[in-house]
Figure 1 (cartoon, rainbow, N blue to C red):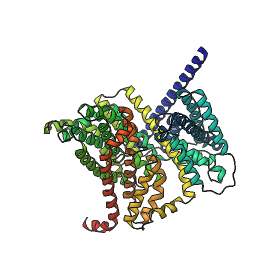
Figure 2 (cartoon, rainbow, N blue to C red):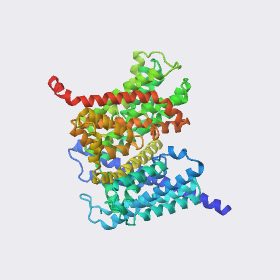
Figure 3 (tube, helix red, strand yellow):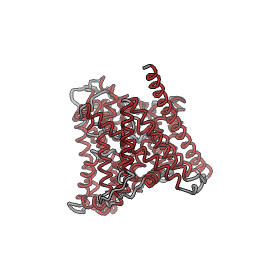
Figure 4 (cartoon, rainbow, N blue to C red):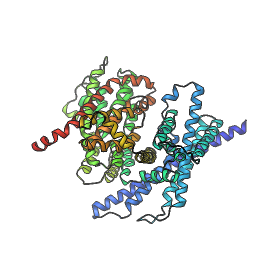
Length: 613
């Protein structure tokens, strides 16, 4: 007995040390990545020329960041697991579902490990500028798969039992063995991949692992994506210079939050709308809209609001479920108002102009903010929380205190929109700006910077892994001409702007119920955008409407990620928050309709607008 306890303790310590080592490695890589990009930016603008090697090195560092962080993403809170269905099962059913889910997670890890190793052994040559051996990129993903399997085993053993860990591992090996067989069955590979990944998602498997496993299971059925091709496509999907902006925007937002600048925004927002009816809720809305210009992550804002705004709302008399609903509802603005991680993912999947998307995000963000303000005004009852109206002097002082955070968003968007800096350069400058602001205000120490680096690195790796896992899945959809089938579906009631707009929104509203927001953008945007363009819709406007549509699903069951984040932090049942958020969901859907109808009418109005302006 004593020996068993000692063994268990040793395994727990080994797992903790491995996680800590991966977190430190991720934070170090992110710091190095920032240093490389920032030095290149300074050289370009101060000395008139950049480094030839900087872009390539930065891209390789980002691949390394995803490789190091992938094990943490699959086994930690960022695993993107759907557990709503599993929770409805009895205890025995939950255990079986859990074993199957972890088996699929093991299968996805094995695909990364073995596929990456195969490519590393086969590929030759070296990188264009630095001369680094190309096999290193794939070896990193192979290592990521191996470490993911190891951490997954230790995680299951700690959370459940050793028997469950061994059982899941055996099932995972069995699923992986199936991918080595060959069956003379005629079937559509993308359909098989979709059904398998969907089943894994419903069972509670991590979304990236479910996507990888779904693609790999098509190999015996004549699919065109063997393991090496899956990993090659995944690495290609992640290795885009534009995506480097994601970790930098996340890091800037983390630093501003840790440095106390977000609280300054709240104080400024309170002086503007705190005296209104439901003034504290309106303050949460305005502060969220302002903080959107510095964050770009709705999940980060939801977590911050649940820790800072929600307790104050409850103390002022708001029922806990209503307070959670308000915080979750206003948090969708962070992925709409620039800088937006969602728009960066969309641009990487469709090659749309990031600057134009950000401008469209401002317009959509304004409409959604107005809709939420109306929804809060009409839905809040029985709470008297209006503060005395602030004087002009109080507003001025609050504005001065909030300027460092407000200025960040202005600098980023103006710089990108007018071509002064690229998106990646702007994101690096955002980090430098956040560091400088926190240093001037003396609000963030070394420990705070280290914590921000570790958190941003983990979130970036999770997003990068999702992008990589979606790339081979999207390739299967393209090979099976799903885009043509999607075009037939969306144009079923006609190929005009209005008909396509309505049906595309319906498709997105249904798909968003079951797909993570990032995965939905990566998989559906390339399919729907050509149809929209053929109908005469503006691609940028359609991209903005697509993101707005999918972001609303942060508040809808069964996924409702924003609701789960807030309810988890506040300790409020998610079902109660889903009910409380219905009024806000209604006004957001109305705002989506306004934006969609405006987009549909734009082809007819554009000539008149050009004549007038």
